[in-house]
Length: 425
Image (spheres, rainbow, N blue to C red):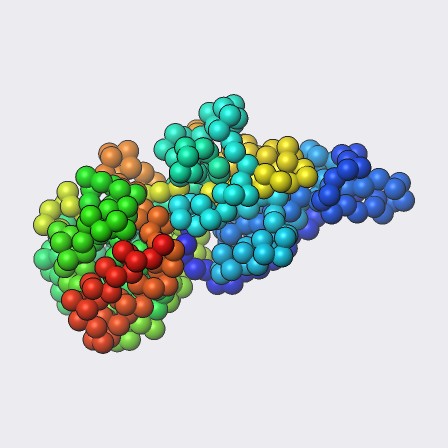
């Protein structure tokens, strides 16, 4: 979930096990003396986690690991906003966590120099889906990180709003989308509440209109970065501006003041019919209205339904610090939270997402299950923004805001996208 930016949540979860027995005398990890006076030391495993979902269940999962490992305490820092900044600060200070997660792709590769190589751990790799493992492969073909969950991204729509407006078929192109907006407006329903205040959301939205399905996500990104593909020549690029025009025309009076939380609240409560987001926000939507009748609308980008895009990826990936003084324990913990029965329950039930590991558990998330129908039918594509040049969202999102405000023309915005993609490294 770049993911997206959630409200700042920085918490350190510390649950001490007073049953000693696993401390090693030559470990450089922080150790603490048993308070009962036995003089035995406990191992402290440092974990950095970027999520704000299922935290209560995560804590219970962590406690179970500690109970099964007397003398081990797992310290977890949950950071769901400014994740890279906080993680990089720790790395710069030499405080590299034993286990940490990060967005797969461009960001993850920045930290592969610190990563344990799982390539020869075939017994572990066999627990995961092959396509999920690919998100953790480095440029030399080595598996340097393990996948969390599949995340799916497109237009989220309120089915009850569509029904009230008499929309019986999902719009497959921009003309049909505009017709749907008109029907919604006639019923007094705000068609769009795109969280345009969030530059990361706009950056993700733009990737739908970049996609060359013959190349898929990573291939499209590589072709754009190399200059083999030009933005002005992309077949669906001009439709991005038509889409943004619709979002302004049929959206709130001040669309750039709509943040992610406001948009999700409006969608869940039927105050808006459509937003752009991913199924990672299921728990937030449920907190606003657990009975909201929501689904995925593949983003209309071209002339037909076959052109529409719903993007799917294992976006977050966990790295084990190869220099951890408790390497085997760190590897065990990483595998535990991602593939054990407890870990699968956390991902499938608490988070409501489809895990990257192989599982038979039922996924509770309504949106994840809706997206699964498209995945099973082979109608999704990979993500572009995670393999884009670094700072893509921070740089290109504001360009889209300027277009929506009338400060940049479509041609000017296109030229600046092109300049960024071919010059950034």
